[in-house]
Image (cartoon, rainbow over all chains, first blue to last red; front, side, top):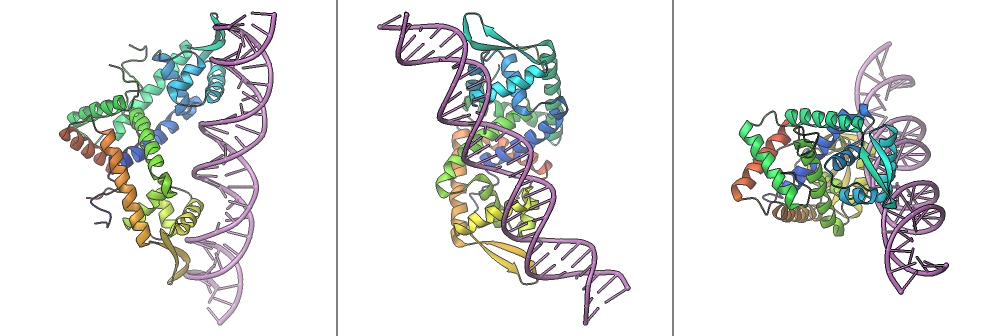
Length: 150
Length: 150
DNA sequence: TTGAATCATTCATAGTTCGAATCGTTTGAG
DNA sequence: CTCAAACGATTCGAACTATGAATGATTCAA
């Protein structure tokens, strides 16, 4: 109906991903709030769990954030007992982060909450639609250079 | 492979939407930068174009942001000549915003750039996959209470 | 052995958004 | 008809996030 159609902006893939991404992130943020975590913290825990990186600099590069941000997040996660800091014996400049048992449990808890949100979001989709959506987003993620487990 | 599987966080719908949404938004932000716009500005133009709201307060509610933020965005859009401010004659407290011709052209331009990003993002998907992804995201958007044109 | 490079850390800063306070306008109770 | 309460817009200060520059410790190479 709009004068801008048929190039409708709001129904474009980019805009939909943006708005839906914001909604999902907002809900996730609220869900993990009680744990004293923000999505970025959970992303750091997940990167550690995936073995994608272990030194703080590597983590920063993997997550696409400034190294100084990893420092403060590591501070907080350490205070929560979710990770331990340890200098690399082979290169004492490097701070190695490792998940603790508590950290692993915390990550597990957050993953469960993410899946609960998934179920809410996708409630109106059939099982087949849900599966093809999952697969399509997986392809997009891989194309965009994000780590995709197989 | 992770200890957290099968509740893998990073492959959850919420997390994927969050990260892909960030990527899409980042690219869109870069694409429209030259126009002096940010995604929020474009969202405001789109809401106006869709006729979803016209007073600033209504706009704020439709967009889910503070009324004071609409004020500053309207200032900037007015300076760009994209919108005009006009007091509602029937209630002079209300500031009505209306798209100008330039504003409509600007929105059109931004929509075209969003679709260019869409094409990049979805390059690895077949036409059928792209279409079913589009439809699934439409359903999710409607379920989440977002305006979905039909 | 020493100067350059590297990693972690601190700190000041920029950018974004919100909420409280203020001003003009409208509304409704009396 | 009047005036106090409600309402919308606007300004302004504060909180939060993330960044980049500066610093310190460690490593590496000549």
